[in-house]
Image (tube, one colour):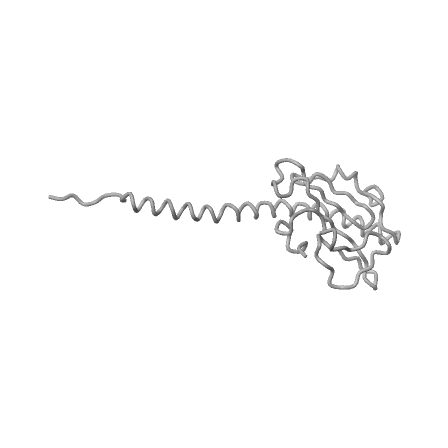
Length: 166
């Protein structure tokens, strides 16, 4: 009397392992990029405080603040997060610098992201993030001009939030 087959054959197990391995090869790099982009989003949250301070300073005095103190913020090294090392204000530009070591992802360690303010013809303040160009004509009033040549910082395009990609 023959017994019924139980379990899987070696070939069936090898096929399953090959499929799981292929899926892992595709998923791990995509997940890595996703986590790096999530870390970069912390920069925009921290820069939001600086953006508000710069706009308030510009609105009250008519000139861009020269540094963090003039904008009513703490020093650049006082504004930090888990992945962000500093947020520095220089005139109408915010420079966010990421930590040079872990826990920041390797793709952003020591890199920068630039946000630049300008005014429209009716005086509204608009922000350019990274190297993305502004949809309307913006004047910086003699301060740092919008420039696609600086690349909006050193963070690679693939890691920037969608509003910061050129």
